[in-house]
Image 1 (tube, rainbow, N blue to C red):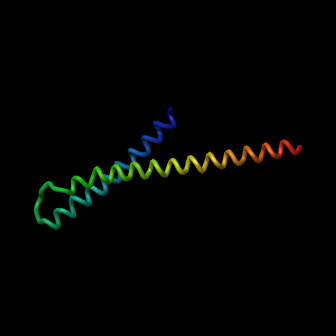
Image 2: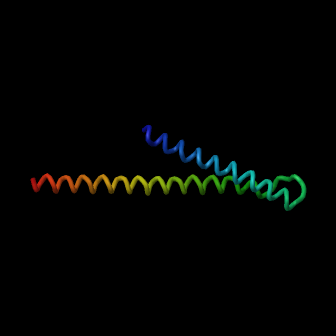
Image 3: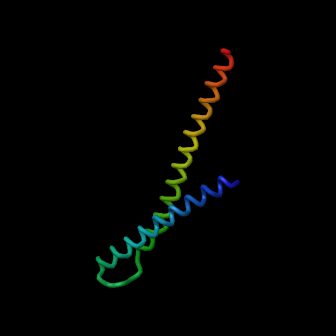
Length: 86
């Protein structure tokens, strides 16, 4: 339960940091191109970045968990083989 909470917290925190950076960049870029303040498509960029980063981190954490699980399983199998030989 706590592991899932920490994972969600990491995903949300990193995604929020990414949208802060991307949002600031997109708004400044749009202002420089337009020459005046307005609200437009640059604000649609923010949720897309959030979802992309959130899902990307989820995928990365899944891969890391799978690698860790495989290493643990391999060690257990090696230990079982050594125990049989003894």
